[in-house]
Image (cartoon, rainbow over all chains, first blue to last red; front, side):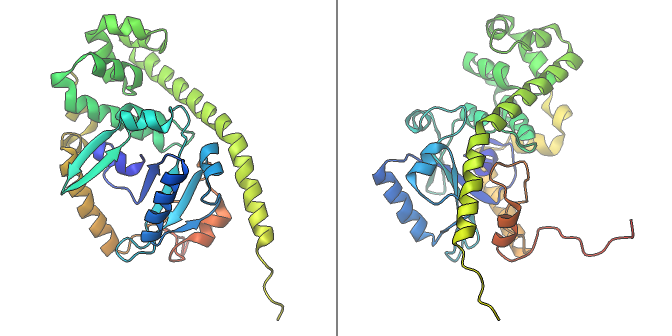
Length: 234
Length: 76
């Protein structure tokens, strides 16, 4: 669901880790533990690999020790801000086949939502995810794609182009994305400012979402440090 | 339709227009080169991430090296 998915969709060229989203029933967590064991992956940092933390929205971090993937980071989440439950995500996932390997990744609209975080680096990624989709599909466009572009494009020139080419769809969506009125009017500078304000609002929403979780993480770190015994006196 | 090459440049436009399988193959080559050059698999320190803890980031560095570290600077 992270950088690897962005590579497959065309928004990134390289990723150093793997992020997965999982369902948290006991059977599946058992299977995930078996896979983690097979990779000789160790839980690093807080929180520990426990259902309650995944269900609360935390990420659990692993590092693999199996030769061949040694050092590879694996991050696991079960709940992501703005996204529905796992079953819904799974039902609308994208599946790719390459070299006899099946790869399931978040659907593109879900990946875009997952990337709406407080971090600077995620916002250019969103822009490229949607731009790449536009570049790949503009010649064979259909209504669902126009809807997705109008909701998520972050490039003013492309958003203006789509809004003006599909005025009816644009009008329908102005209630959920008011800046589309600027796109329809071709006001590029005002649109760029409105996109920045939209981004700022999402980043603030993400900070608010994470505030209680960060407090929990800080408490877990304090607890863990207290459990570490002092080094022996010389 | 906007000319994507004029907007993002040839390199990104080419990447956008590959198939996912082609991108997977290309990123695998980059991965091998990166590892052969001794590239670290540790994430860059990201103080904006809700998971970021500077103490843990230093303690958990796989090889004890930062991706980039300061070894010398002028007096200012």
